Length: 125
Image 1 (cartoon, rainbow, N blue to C red):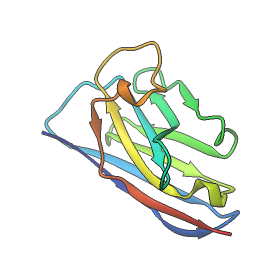
Image 2 (cartoon, rainbow, N blue to C red):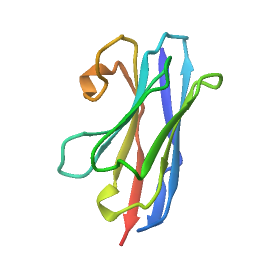
Image 3 (cartoon, one colour):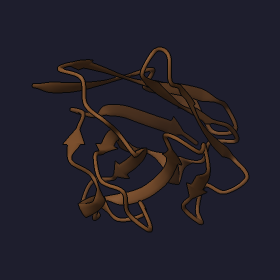
Image 4 (tube, rainbow, N blue to C red):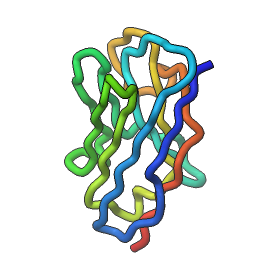
């Protein structure tokens, strides 16, 4: 069993920052990428960021480019999401995900095999 656990969510004022972390535990598995998605009430799940576990290349959703930074700590099996200049529209439940497949892209939620339970981020305006 693989578990992904997110932490670091909370309430922040617009313009502020938060740092989310995702830790993997349970049985070991080979991961090719890890990503962050988010889902606001009444909206579809949205791609936020992804990082290639071996090469370190990153991708970002258009709405967060220049504000969010994804990073990984391979030794600790954790992935982080630094969120700066937060806006009210960033309010959502943020999910961490891991992919065990070598794919051309990790922008789609179907590329991922394991998911965390999510952590709430609320940005007040």
